[in-house]
Image 1 (cartoon, rainbow, N blue to C red):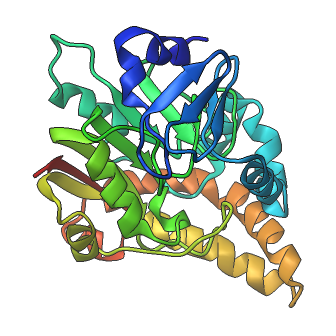
Image 2: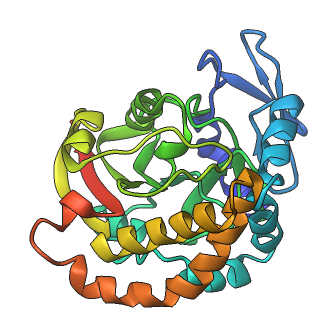
Length: 294
């Protein structure tokens, strides 16, 4: 069972908790059972399902609708998907990456790092992937606002472009903080000047000061621009073109925008310069925040 096998065997079993009440879970063959009667959670060959079948079906249907249908197809082939994404997505992410947290952890111990909203790739072999969609590299299927872990479980928690897609980001950040050990490391990359993009929905944007408020339970370690002003300009041009050239057909707008991204995406390389300009955070496409749990 790979990563899951490591987690459910031996001393790591106690890290799991019921996502509803945080009560102790019993392990019986192919399922976890909540001691307080909140149901059973399926243990698959390489995944644990901490959401019910109806929620799983909802998220999968949303992921396969509209423009997400095309993204869903390519995500079956993660290497191809991210190769195309890095070329044609008009946002150039050149800030600190999630794997940078490993340099902040104790190299003399086996660290537990949780990647929330991981998508279909494993950015590091030691990361535990959690998502609402059962992509091939996802270990745990769960709602990020109800994490199925005990308090103080993880040495670090990372997330990329996740918090804009949840209706209650403060609750999710509280859950991130809860499952971190004392002085554990948080990494988050979050959009600022980026158009609406549902995956499966889209709710929020943050300024630099907004991130300070959102992560007030953390001591700032580092912050900066992840996708700069040039990326912001290109992605808005793509969506502007999609809206204008769809001539009022709303469902076609996202497809036209996708086409403009293919054209404009390679030009994002210029953001290597623009993202380093003083004050770039005020017009950035994406920002990042690294903090230590207070």
